[in-house]
Image (cartoon, rainbow, N blue to C red; front, side):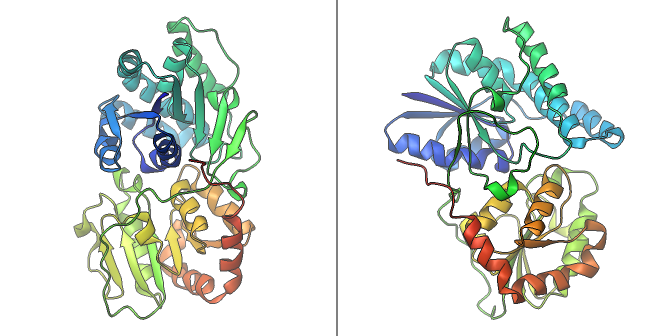
Length: 366
C-alpha cells in the first residue's frame, strides 16, 4: 500500500506521525511524507522520503494573525481557524494536490491540524486518518470558526459543506494519554490510542563528567524562539534554574545564546537534544507543549511546567490536577522555579503516577 503522511512544520506536529510511519514501513508499505520546507530535512534525517508542500508561513500574514490574538475571547479557537484552517491551507493546498496526483496514495494520514492533506484526500476519494497531536478537548475551544474556514476551501473544491472538523468525521489515532485529553469537542469515532516512541533512538549528547547532583532537562519547545519577545522568558527561566540544587541541560532551540547573558555554572545550554538523551534526567522543566509533555510522561518523569500559549496552560493544569507535576506561572518563574524543582525531585509521589500514566496505551503493531 502507498501511504502519504502530511504535517505542518512543528516537531510537536510531526513527531506523533513517526510511530505510524515506522510501523507502515516495517510492514512493507510504501511511505512518503509531505511537509512544509522547514521540516523537510528533519524528515529526511529520520529516514523517510519527503516532498515540500509550502515555503512556510508568510511573515506578513502570520504577523497579522498574531496581532489579532490579543482581542480574542479564546485564543485556540482563533488560531485553529486563522492559522491552521486558512493561512496554512492556502500555502500548502496546491503542492499537496500535486503530490497526491503524482504519488497516488491509497491512504492519507494527516496530523489533525494539517488540513490540506485531508481536503485533497477527500476530493480524490482516498481514505484518511487524522492523528491527534495535542488535546482537542481544550476548555472553550469552538470548532465552528475552523469548520467555516474549511467549508470555504471545500466549496472551492466542489466538496459538500460539513459540520465538524476531520478528526470528528474520520478515523482518529493519538498517542496523547487520557490525562491530557480534556473534556471539550474531541474525537467521536474510530479512536485508537497508541504508545509514545522517541523520534530518534539517541543522539551524541555529552554531558559534563562532574555532574553528580540530580539532573534536570529544561526546554521551552521549538516554537517559542520564533515568537517576538520570548528572549525575556528564557532569561527569567535561566535565572530560576541558576538557583536549583541540580545540574541542568537547557535546550533553547533556535534562540541566539547571546540573548541569554551569562550562563550559570550548573546549566549546560545547547540548541537541541534528542528526546531519549534529554529524558535521561530526574525531572523536566518545560513549557507544557504536548510533544514534550507526552515524552516526559512516557519516560516516567515528574514535570515543572511554565505554560506560555496554545494548549500549554491546559496541559499544565491537567498534570497538576493529576499529581504529575507542578505549574509555575511565567511571571513568577525566577522566584518560584527553584522550589518547584526541589518539590518534584524530593517527593516520590510525582514519579510513581507519572510512570503509571504511560502504560495504558498499546504499542504500534508492526
